[in-house]
Length: 111
Image 1 (cartoon, rainbow, N blue to C red):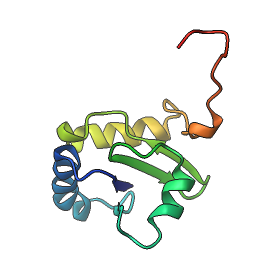
Image 2: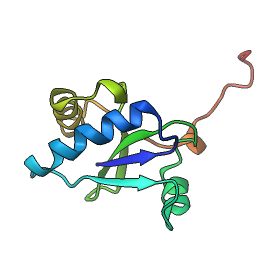
Image 3: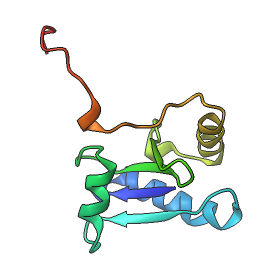
């Protein structure tokens, strides 16, 4: 699971502080952080293909090479919401994120 720091927002800070205490106690996945100033950030962000505005949390399935974007509010994240997110992924309740480049907009629908 990767916290992607794009904006240094309060929501990012809250999620980061939560993961600092949560991650050492889990064994199901590894936690990491991608900061906008990191050397490989642009490459990772381009691969993630989830826009550039807000910080987010991405779960990366390394066996299937799929990515999932946490749908909840980062400032309200807690162990239950993360555990439910991961369980829903494993149960097939959440589809892998395809990326902005895979979203088809119907040109006949007014925006």
